[in-house]
Image 1 (spheres, helix red, strand yellow):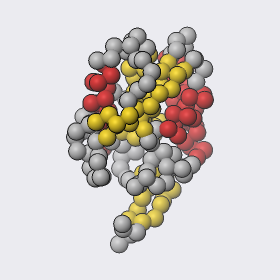
Image 2 (cartoon, one colour):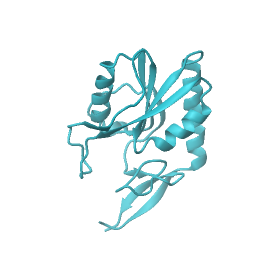
Image 3 (tube, one colour):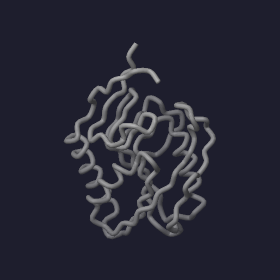
Image 4 (cartoon, helix red, strand yellow):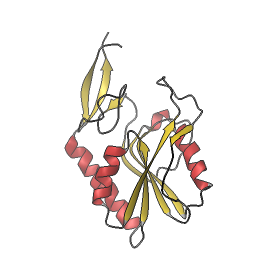
Length: 176
């Protein structure tokens, strides 16, 4: 593995400000309703936990794990569910919570999959929108931050399963 360093991009305080803002939007939109939060493993668990604690409506939490990258850093375009939901979706308001959206291919596939489960509504919440890498238009209803580029880690985002535990978000800079 190449040597690299981590360059600070977004502080813990900035992250919490954005989580608060997103939670206010979700609380407004789902006032008087209950909500099923569906976290995309592994990366979304940190954001989902922070978001869930700020929501004022009754919430249930479930997780799904999707595989599309295999051992590569580039998506294969083929998506598999390796851990499925345990709670029923039919007739529920579902908020899919993701750590980062870049190409949009995996989420596009999963949103189409969820439609077949007859949810009352499905919306998408991502902490990081890496919009310049988008290959498929996915409807991001709630977004924490938008970044044009960079390989980011921290706050659930990983590099080879490392750095998810960092409180801030850092850019991986590979050394020559």
